[in-house]
Image (cartoon, rainbow, N blue to C red; front, side):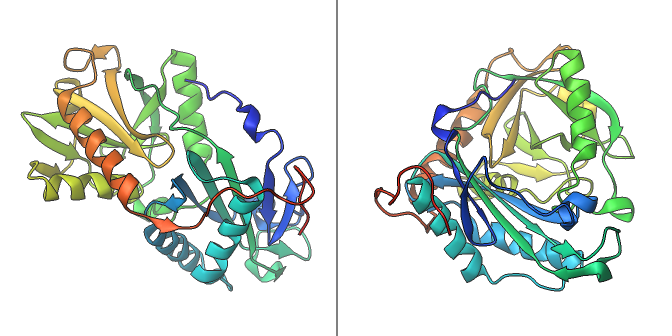
Length: 313
């Protein structure tokens, strides 16, 4: 699975600390903490009909991650939402859009890892792209990575940080194996997540996912569990082994960028009958219905942007 370039994104306007610039002119300082050490937190948001789904939850996780990293300054939710609105308006976006928020510790006065070197910050980057859910709905093929997800005593996954090397290395393994993504285990050998998404199985009508010990507390993951509770679908959060995944009736991944996506093969084993299953389809329908009804309004009707494709701020 390789994302393809969308021509609508050729002249994107990117927001860096409130300055709206063409994507080819956007940049951050080489002294910025994100360049110096991946010292940043981030969130992925999705826009449905002018509304961002679960925006408050995403902003709460962004703030919690920044607090855990002892950021000296964190913009208010109102400030962040205003910059999202400005970015979407500049790009005339209302639907089928993915927004990546990145908040760095800011700019250092000289290179080095010590946060006391930061004299200007934070840096807020709002990147909005025309992007449909990225996964093939016909079913994903996963391969188990040799890398293990960190436990909280190493690098707590509750910090949604921008250092993604562990995920990138796992993705390289998946690419080399001809798979779509990598399934990652925790240090005890239980399933944590994939390199990019949370992971669920369905066995005997029960929807199950692993405990959020070595994986982030996914917002789409939480939404699926809420949908199960509201609609009388049995669900459990438990340690899941690879054997339980291999013999499951269904499996699927969840995430903001890809929503719900069926998994039909893991490590050469066919899951269920090798096709997206009925529970995955039901939860996908319930999720789609919810995203069409809920969310924070951040974009109005499309309006022309003065000056054509480029904007300055």
